[in-house]
Length: 616
Image 1 (spheres, rainbow, N blue to C red):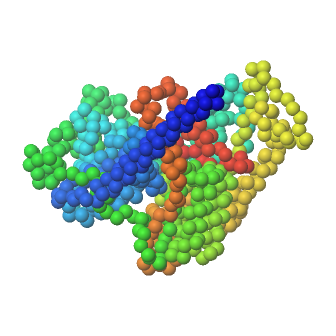
Image 2: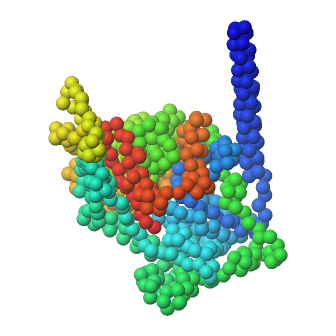
Image 3: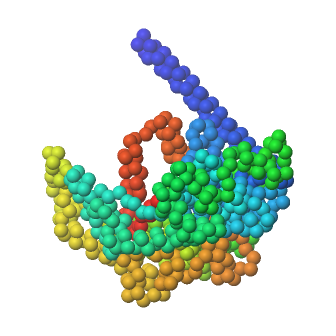
C-alpha cells in the first residue's frame, strides 16, 4: 500500500514537472519567435522607407557621445523590448559625422534641425569635430536651425555652429565655464578608522588624493588650471567666432550675470538675445513655420522630416565594409577604464584587446592597424599586455597608428607609447606618466567594534595583505620597491617608444597632464589631427593607395548580451520605480572617486590611471 502510494505521488510529481517543462519550453520558444519577428521588423522597416525631397533632417544627439560602436544590436534591442527595459541613451560620434556628411550632398535634405536638448556628455574635442562637419554642411548652401527652450553649456557649443539659433521666450542659456571638483574622504575615513595606504610616484599623480587629502594639492591645482584654461579658451573663441561677437562680450554674459539679469528684470531669454547668443525668440509653432518655409510646405501640411535613425539606415556607415578588399586598415576603438580580463561596457579588457589585435595579425588582408583611444588609463598589468601585443603586430611588419580622442592618459599612454605614430587633437588630455597603489586596512575600525583577528603563518608575509591587519614597515618597503620598478618600466617604455632620452622622459613624467598641443611640443605625440588623419597616416605608412577601413570587434555570448541589457536597464528600472537615495548620498556614490575604486583589480595592485571629471 505504501509502495503504491509513493508510486502514485511520484507519478503526480513527474506529471507536474513534465507539464512545467512543457510550459517553460513553450515560453522560451515563443520568446525566440517574437525576438526573430522584432529583429526582422527592425531590419526591414529601416530599409524600405523612402525619403521625400525637401525634407528636414532632425539631427538627434542625446545622452553620452561615445566612439566605440555599440554592441547593442537588433538582437539586444529585441531582448530589451521583450523585457520591457530601455538602455541609457548614447550617441555614436561616427554615426553623426556620417549622417552630416551624406546629408550635405543629398538633394533630398533641405536643412538640418539640431535636436540636442537630450545631450548630456560630450568631449570638447568631439564637439569640435561635429562642429567642423556642420560647417562643411553649411558650405553646401543649406541651413542649420538650432531651436529649443534651454541650452546647457555643451548644447550651446554645438548650437553655435547653426545658421540660426532660436530660443523659447521662456528659456535661457546656462553657461558657467569649465571646472574640476573632487570629493575628498580623508576626514571621513579617519572617523571610520579606515586607513588607506597610498603609494604613488609622480608629483602630479593625484588619482588617489581623495583618499588621503581633504583638498586639491598645489601641484594638482597648477596643472589642472593650465589645461582647463586651454580648453575653456578654445570653447570661448569657437563660440565667439561662430556667433560673430567678441570673446570679451561672451565672457561678460557669463561673468556679469547678476548685474545683467537685474537690468533685464531677470529675463534670461531676453539677455541671450541682447548679447547675440541667439538670433530670435520664438515658440515652437513659429519654429515649425520657419521650417515649412524651407521645405516649401503650407501651414496645413505636416512638416516633412526625417529622423537621424531613419536616415542612418539608408546610408553606408563608415568602417563597416565587408567586401573582399585585399588592402584593409583595421580600426579598434578602446574606450573606458583599462582592466584585466574581458571588456565590458566602458572598460578596455586586456584579453579582449589581445584577441582583436591578433585578428589584425592573422588576417593577411589587414595591412595596418589604427587604435582610437578614449581612456584615462587603469591597470598597469593590462596596459602592458595590450602594448606587448601591439608590438608583436609591428614586429610582423604591420604599422600601428594611435589616434587619441578626448583623453588618452596614464595607462592609455603606456599602451600607445611604442606605436609607429601617435596622433592627438590639440585639446586631447594625455601624459600622466606615473603609477600608484592603494591598500586599505581596517584593523583600527575592528578594534573599536571589539572585533579581533589572530592566527599564525609560516612566513613573515603570510598575512601581509590582510586588510584586517596593520601594514608592516617591511611590507610597505616591499611595496615601494615594486612601485619604483613599475615606474621605471613605464619610463623605459616611453623613452624607447618615443626615441627620447630617459632623463628627458623623467622630466616630462611625474604624473603631469599635457594637452595634445603641449604634448606635440615636448615630443610625446607626433602629429595633431583627428581619426581620419590617423587613418590616412596608416595608409601612407603601409603604402596603400586604395583601401577599406574596418572595425575590429569581438563576439559576445548570449549570456554577455543578456547581462549587458540587464545592466544597462538597471538605471531606467530604478527610475521607473522611483527608487532614489538622498541627493547627497547619490552624489558621493556616483562620484568618479568611488567609481574608480570599482575597477581596482590589477593582479599586482599597480595602477597607471588619471581621473578626469570636468564640470562642463
